Length: 273
Ligand SMILES: C[C@](O)(CO)[C@H](O)COP(=O)(O)OP(=O)(O)OC[C@H]1O[C@@H](n2ccc(N)nc2=O)[C@H](O)[C@@H]1O
Ligand SMILES: Nc1ncnc2c1ncn2[C@@H]1O[C@H](COP(=O)(O)OP(=O)(O)OP(=O)(O)O)[C@@H](O)[C@H]1O
Image 1 (cartoon, rainbow, N blue to C red):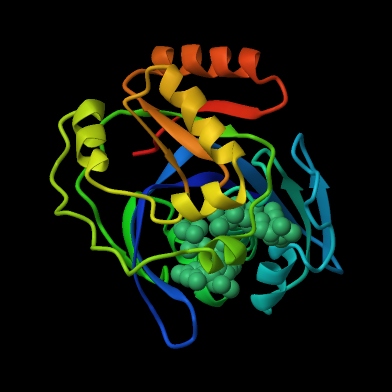
Image 2 (cartoon, rainbow, N blue to C red):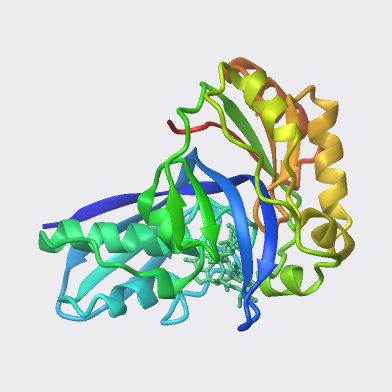
């Protein structure tokens, strides 16, 4: 049976780096949500493994065994499939990309075979949260997931200035001591209340990313100029998000930023509950 799975963009609304393990991986404390925009993975039973990469954002995406879709698929040890990845998210941009695609691949193959979705944290630190696919507090190096209070209705404008940032390079550029954990989470009454809480949090990777790519600062400035409740970088960047209360506010801001910066990737999408 042919099966399809969504790979929604993963957004770190805040990301504190709280320590470092002996193996070099960093300990994180992050509120992760998903946005109503993403890639899609389709799996069709076949005699041999194959991957077709399609869609508007294929530039820089590996098409062979290096693609996380293929790595995830082969790791299942299950029967072969013809896989189609429709790429709508920019590559190497801090919003999950390959990890979201790997998780969607595991879901699509499980649905195709009628089997349980396997555990696949080894494919990447962001894969467990992408497999969970719902808002979560992510700790450890990404493997420890806890439920969070219900999120209010909120909308995001995602903006990528077209600069690819390498996750290892951004972690390597971190300076300063380990940061504090996230403040206590409470049920947020609305998007503004969530923004107020987030204002007391950080993305500790943001200063490092801004040193590596000045476009991150330009992106945050564009969002701030469009009256968002909060502007911040996601993950290791360079994609930044603006938080808005309504779909109309987000669509208006996205339209204006897109008109001012026609070469940038700009998308408005709801926070998925
Ligand atoms: C920055 C985040 O996107 C936040 O959600 C993730 O922590 C990164 O997740 P990812 O892209 O799946 O990362 P991986 O492919 O597992 O790791 C890439 C590289 O990032 C660094 N890395 C990643 C995760 C982590 N907790 N500490 C790290 O130091 C390591 O140098 C690692 O070799
Ligand atoms: N399916 C895929 N989509 C995008 N990149 C992929 C994929 N498979 C492998 N890659 C490789 O992974 C690298 C990192 O891209 P990816 O989009 O996963 O990063 P990211 O968005 O920064 O991830 P994260 O938010 O988890 O840090 C790319 O440079 C690309 O070569």
